[in-house]
Length: 484
Ligand code: ADP
Image (cartoon, rainbow, N blue to C red; front, side, top):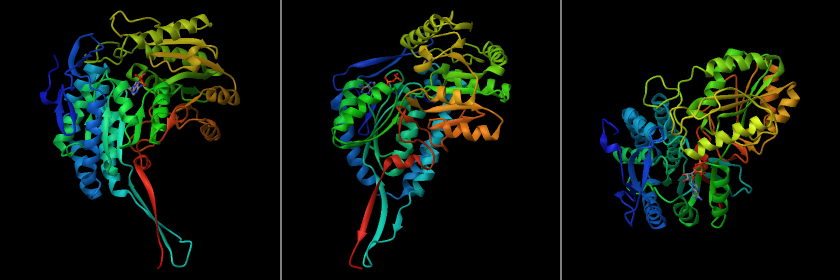
């Protein structure tokens, strides 16, 4: 059983329209611990009717919320941020129990998620308008920015706290309400966040959390005309479905979809730094982040040296239950995730790859998988085109910078990319040529509430975090004053 300092954070009901509620028909779904296979708790399996009530309440709650001063909204967000930090250990324990990542990473995620609430509490006060030159002597032109309206969010299981915080933070800062459907694998972190929202003074109905059927809840969120905007983080396939559903009522959308990140090591790189970056970018969260290195391209002159040093570093990773001290890699989220990694490894071997480390399910069973390195990767392999979302590092060899640019950009995705070089000319050339929303240069860790997170091409649209992130929740309105 989960031992919490504040047991009230483990919620088995949804916060709908300001009230903790069961599903209308009483049905529930189990949440299981991926490290043990045990059920942690059951949460409501809700559908369209409960979602509709949450949306109606959001519309009502927004009327007052959007009229408050930015400073008043900021104060509520700030309290919420402080409550996340005050309850960091409990929130991390819940997160690790349902998601599997090591406790240290879970604590880090809570601080990371909280940072979005803090940041957007501050940004709330910096939503500026504009005055423009008028097009007539008797006219004045003003641009104001207003909340987009009721928003919906659908979030994934790999960051059960932070993916929510970075949507609800800017939404509430801008004056919007939000109805959230968290991933069914990790609803407990979302419900704990909602419990703290109540404590922080988020008004009833302004933020609802609906757990249950993705199809039914998703159809209501995307079909209901009261919802003005959907923010989604998840797979490209689901994103496309949701975009199509949103088209009928022309909803605004922010889409943070899949990636296929290249991680490039040039001959002139600091190899030790590149190894550290590769470990952070590839094996964090067991490889289950949309910005994880998916394809590692290493220039011929350092290929073998980098492969050896990476193997030595990966061999030190400790696989196990995230609650155990020293563990650096927890289980994958479920059996499907394990199968995909197995499939990518088998396919790589069939196309000439050589497994130099790992390659199999871990002896611990469940979703545990050995950290894996495959040498001699090539463009015919699935790993070259698809996101593995697991602890598999395929090493591709390349010769020239031009060849590398072509290889790195040869994908429909455009989220994160990374490269290591100490040549300032090359740094500019490659950074400008990479078709990605984010480029990590001599670093494998790029996410921050201060920077705009998001992708191009089929990795999506919109940006989260930074001074740009609140724009996704604001509309421009142009006022033309005549007769002056
Ligand atoms: P992942 O592979 O990360 O689970 P998904 O895109 O399947 O990616 O899931 C991300 C989120 O989208 C989850 O909350 C999931 O429940 C939700 N989801 C999946 N399919 C649909 C759908 N058809 N409509 C609405 N939400 C969906």
